[in-house]
Length: 217
Length: 285
Image 1 (cartoon, each protein chain N blue to C red):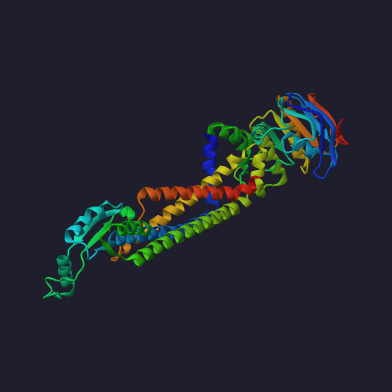
Image 2 (image 1 turned 90 degrees about the horizontal axis):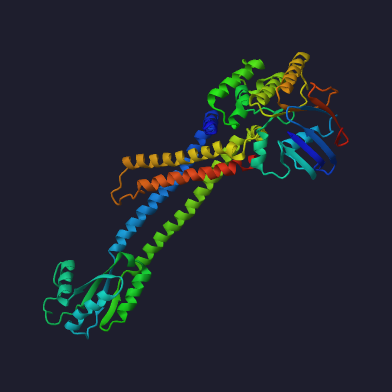
């Protein structure tokens, strides 16, 4: 199991109930689309997945291991297995596009030659060759999203979390992103896609959830 | 290996992107270290200077008039037995007369050959470990207990002043040293804090992607080490260059040994690492 959440309760810093008795399962190679309006707790869910928040009660397991009470070093090891796009997962402003994309490979300890090969592949795949040496502040919103997708794909991590994949994208880029998502869903990697837009499952091996009143239905 | 290369790359990226801050940081720290070095040299030089002066300290022990010449000479062994006494030289009435004549230039005691009024005495010198007022006091007390010893004379006031001056230099050096180290720490930490503040968002993103605190902080700690040690090296280069251009005739400058200077530069580097830790602490929360 890639992700397993059981009977999870979470309150906001101000004491408001965000999740009550939340249950969620994502097995290896499957994808989940979680739809919910703004303020329904999608970002809190991402924070739970990457260990930024700890639940009040209930359990959350990532890659078969409970992360509820893990120390920072162990959490970091889990975070390296997750590729992130949108929401919290912004680009590192002091790094160029190429450096941003290659960063997960540095954390994974990949050799320089492999890094260069994979980087070139990603830059080509996402049409970012021209922007390779550019810093994020000079990129358009679309380009920034593409760089995030490239960064989330380069290290072939087992799980990709995508927060609002089509937000602010033109129809042609949104189409490319949808293509990417479908391709990834068939590549054996698991994905969690959080969106506020009414949408459907992206492929036959994906599930569709709605986040309503602190529960996934 | 990949991570190490990345960390080194980050270190030079930071220096390359902020050369002005790095140079200003090195120069300001070098100036502080220069002050520290100068006081270090001053303390060493004055210590040697006073050490030389104190090594000439002598105590004059006069023999009582009632003691016979034989008894007076017998005192030598007893005096030399006292702990801290390096040598006791007997000055007979005749020797004292000759010394007086040598000082004045003329024998004032012509016609007093049989009734030389000058006292017999011993000139005592001390072992280097006993060139302190407390130790000399103890020797004086031991001497007073010996039968046949009369008046004891030595430059007590001068000895106390010399000791007090040495202590003032030592204490001022320690206070100044502590102040300089504190200023260095704060100044360097502020420089690193300024450099890191603009990159706070980047640190957060790196952590979300799974980078550990040490991985993010290490380039800044290395930068602190590099800036600290380079500043210390620069300050000593200035000292060595100045020393080759200036000469003193009254006293000899006492410079620390090469190994002491190397240790100092290393310590300055460690201080830089501490500054780095202080500078980056808030960003790592």
